[in-house]
Structures are given as C-alpha cells and as structure tokens.
Image (cartoon, rainbow over all chains, first blue to last red; front, top):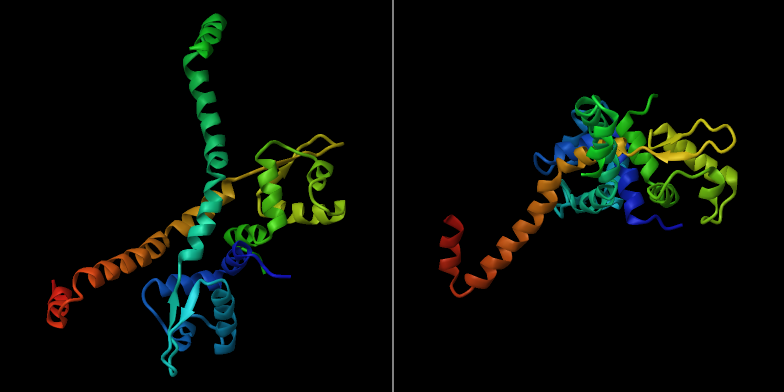
Length: 121
Length: 121
C-alpha cells in the first residue's frame, strides 16, 4: 500500500519527539548528533524519527558527507493546513452559534413578539 | 504512555478513510451504517476508525440508543492548525528566497563584479 502524502505528513507529526525535532530545526540546520543532545535518546532512535520526517518530506539532508545536516522543509505543512482550513467554519461555527444565542438571550427576552420580529430583520 | 492531544489528532488524521468520514460528517450527522455505505468496508472496520476519531475528540456520538449518530467535533483541528501556523514563515519563506534568487539572476547576470556588490546592498 502506498501512503498518500497527507497521511504521511499527519503520521510524521503524530509524535512529540518529531514535532520537537522540527521546532529545533526552525532555529537552523543541525546534524543528527546535535539533534540528539536535548533528547534523552540514542542516535539510532533519533535517526529513526528523522527517517519518518524525511519520508514525509518534512526534513531534507545536506550533502556534506560528514555531517549530513538536517533542514526543515515546511511545504508539506502547507498542504496539511489547507486541508484543515476546510473545517474552520465547523470549529468557528459552533462558537458563532453560541454567541448568537447568548446575544439573542440578552437583548430579546422582554417580549415574545419582539423576538419574533427581530429574527426577520 | 498517555498520548498527548495533538499527537492523537494527527494520528487520527493520518488515514484517508478517517479523513473521508470527517468530510462526510460536515454534511450532517450520520449513523455508523450510513457512514459505512460509501466505503467498501465492514461495519466493524468503520467502527474501529470511528473509535480512533472519537478518542481524538474529532467525533462525538449522539444519545439516541438505536442510531447513536456521529457528529463532527472540529475543535481539535483548531489546536492542530495553530501548531502548523507557527511554521508558515518557513513554507512561505522558502518561496520568497527562491523568488529573490530568480530576481537576482535575472537582473544581475551581466557582470560578476556587479553581482558581488548587489549581494552587499
């Protein structure tokens, strides 16, 4: 089974260590050794996480044979954010509906008739 | 190990069937049977996906004992989008850098000396 790009991106992000690696790389390129330092992890464990990030296209490796520095490649996050944005009206919508309800309760409680008319305007 | 909320959200989204279920639920609440129809999948397989979405807080179940309709709960996507937004400058930045480079190539190719000076300004 081939994994689609969006699934690979989300799977790569579903781990706090991998998200922390990306956060570290926003400060500049780093070797695997440099990345391993702040985490209490072995180099092979960090390398494994890096491979997941690389496969998702979120990290690229430099050509310097000794260091092969890691670099963040954020463009897959753009596609993922676009996907999420489609749902924005759902998370904003629920608050809007609550806002509308509270506003209506506040201003239109006096008379039943008024409330009916206000809804039409 | 407890999985943090953000990891649970990303893990839930890392599957095309689960993303399709969410897309279907934007059109209205649906029972497990209704959700299973468009997918060539057994009810237990769909139920398994729904459990992942429920655990991530992306789907809630109604109280109607017979149907227990599924509803989309988009708020975890808000947190995930906020996390991604932090990286926006990186995916926008990379295009900016490419743009700058191409512009520089176009206007400053004539003389080596000029190109050197341009870099300083």
